Length: 127
Image (cartoon, rainbow, N blue to C red):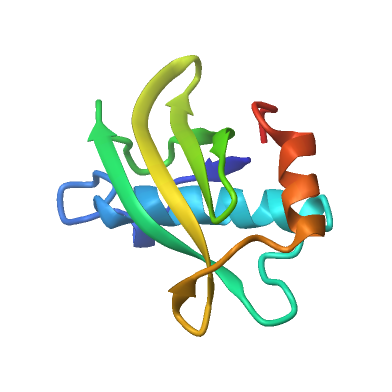
């Protein structure tokens, strides 16, 4: 997914405000699921972010055009591990590894079979 940095994305120094990198990644994940007709929620449950680890490599600035890529790196019965990278040109500027859980009634639960099959079809595929 391509993102352009606008004034509203920056702090007083003209650099992207740090939580906005996570917003870009969230939009890219959601856009992929929407574009592939993969539901972000099942009949009675949904995906939530359980944990994440970020690395800010170099700042993005007002007017930069960024690319956000995502890879599913591991699928378990109740969780997904996803790695996302934000790049300016070919240079990575931000990475995040996150774990998403499928929950029902705010408790980890098994993925519905159809959701699990869909995740396996896109595993390790650039999204």
